[in-house]
Length: 383
Image 1 (cartoon, helix red, strand yellow):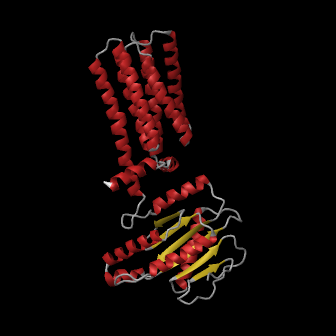
Image 2: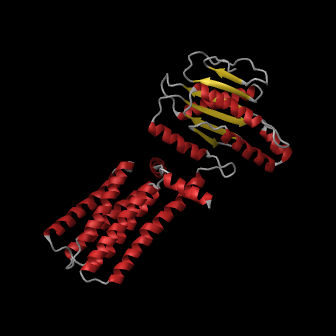
Image 3: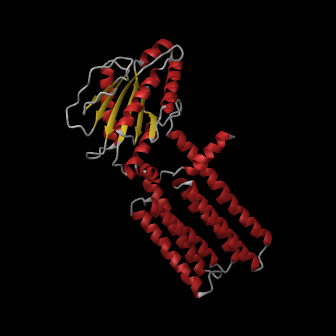
């Protein structure tokens, strides 16, 4: 029960990563098809409105007919926009679909046939489907609230004019099932699947795709202050698999993941990027990053069970005093430092400071009883 509640809370707080979703679509040929389908929705809405305007049950008042013509123009604009322009930003997407929700409700309110107007609210399920996929739970909740209010207003209008009360209740219930039950459930199931897609099934850390998603957020929000990347690679892990079997190897990996989380500092993201490779990225200053790396080295090396392992750790630091590197270049520097630690025998931390102007230098290895940290770039022994 507690786990289910935690998942629901995480789903509710999740920002939905609109930019990542749109970028993922943009990398596939499906983008063209998706844009064509969404744009076609505008053509259908314009066609429906025009047919209603031409029917005997269309809006009677000049204001109602004027509003329907405005909605027709918006629907045609919608089609042209989706067919000819790039995928919208998050803000533009919200504005477009908010306008579509309002247009659907207003168009139904102009119907002289109030039964048809009440039934037409089901079109809000179409816009809700897009919102469920592309936006977060809070946005979908606003859409669901609008659906319920529109349904109640349209059915009340029908019943006041002499319509069947039970038919009105049935229409409201249909709207509730579609807009308040089905769409949020669909979004939650989709969210669970997306979390699985960015999570390593063995260690429950972020996988490489999940790390890339986090890095995209870093790039989009911008970063100018201290930041670091810490690459962790278990030493001679192949010997563990060969000598004890892959089951024990998996236990070592899950144990390592647990220990990485136990020393995780605020602002750090921990991921498993390969077989025995882990990557930590965070907005940490140089001293905090060095301390965290040493804590990680000691935690990994802590004996437990029949198999003891150590780790080679590379740290790349950016202190904000030079041009900002990309997250990927920072990670590449951390990997280089990690391989240097391996060359020096493992169970070691090597630090590379990106703001350094001096050639990389590795200091002599410290005794095992001391924190085993080397600093490349700006030379600094960590006591």
